[in-house]
Image (cartoon, rainbow, N blue to C red; front, side, top):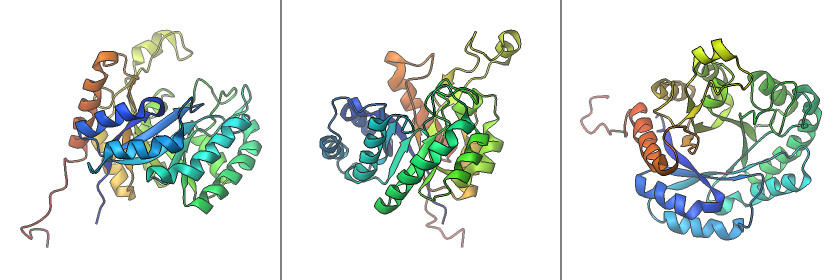
Length: 295
């Protein structure tokens, strides 16, 4: 039987308890706890039981714990990522999300040997713990020739990465908005890469082709602002259909705080709209056949 795809939201590790309360009360079905480059003054082992206590018996669960960093060049961040792999079970989860890392200022191919070394070790660690690692597809301001902290932003990169580290312990954390800003059509890509996708971020984009024609793609204007699902270009009904056909049984977690219109005081409005919109796109809630009409 086809499994329903749950709808969650990303919550910042530094303010996880307040965000978890919002997600719980709004009706989200899971949360993804995220840290960026550092855990700051958060004691992750202490946070886990407090967060689970906030979620209580609501049925809301932690889908993943993210530590987005550059493990290829920053040894301290690599150790923290290993710590997350070892301790994600405290949240009742078995997935850690992150970046692939990079050699800052160098090309994607230049980073592959180091990626093979580091992620080979991380995947062996994850396999031993029954954990999966999901690599997000955000370019973080880099490109093929000069990276910042993540080479895992493009399908040509993915081909090289999966060839270098063929472990089943890692896969993609795919987000269509990060592909739209590269002028990649997300839906054909999703059909091709769905078997390698183990987690999704719910974030969209609005591509302004008039801006592209007038100013190009090198940063003079923001031609593809990131949007909360329901406000961008993508028809998420197609996303759900493709995922279901591919047998995806994970979840989609909305990544907020990027929409240029519905932000700041309007962030909770955007979060609620995204939840309602994605519920609609998946066909609402499952309705059990009590009448026997499908028999």
